[in-house]
Length: 272
Image 1 (spheres, rainbow, N blue to C red):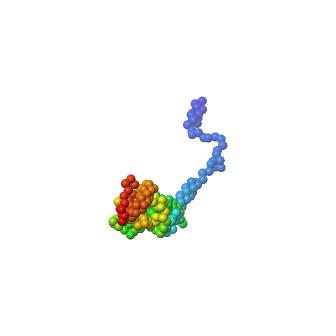
Image 2 (image 1 turned 180 degrees about the vertical axis):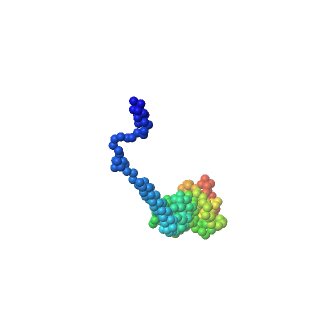
Image 3 (image 1 turned 135 degrees about the vertical axis):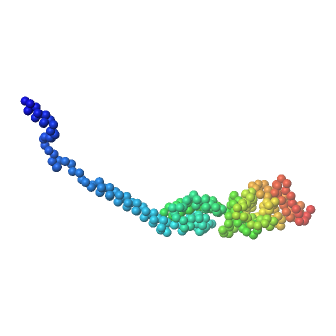
């Protein structure tokens, strides 16, 4: 009895042995050593190729001359030349990546001839495309022997061609020097000249005096002065009425002044 008890205690102290079916190597999952390493290596190689390709593209992008601005495509030209617009844009030999369309537009608008501009930046061959809108000349303004164009707002522009359809305004010699680049013609003088031309289409040349305004040499030998502004129809009626009165009285005027239509006056060459 005591012997049986000792054997039971010995058996309890012995390590347990798993009884039953022993797992064979075939039934255990096989770990594929090295798969993750090969996958990780392929991604690193792929990423490196991407970086290398982008670097090569950037190098070519900045190294090739095709991406540097040597000319522009310009539309809307009538008086201005393509070369002038390119010079105004101030982007010669600049890389297309550094071209700011808004800055180019502001540079082009420095020209008094150009009223507006649209700038589009793209890819070769026409990397910079510009469409401009030019100001239209309204009169030819000649001062100190230098003729310029003036638009309807009084802005001075360079005369680019002969326009016989425009009325020519010749400034009296009492005004010294030609117009400066940033000097505008009085708006009242421009509108007055346009009105006189529309009312008397046979007038090709007008005179301008700082005090008497606009005038012309009448075909009958006297000077007529009309001032400036938009009331030329009234002044012409007063002028013609006064002329008829003078002619009926046998008076040859030297000057007829209707600058103030409410108080016109004249000077005479001969007559009563």
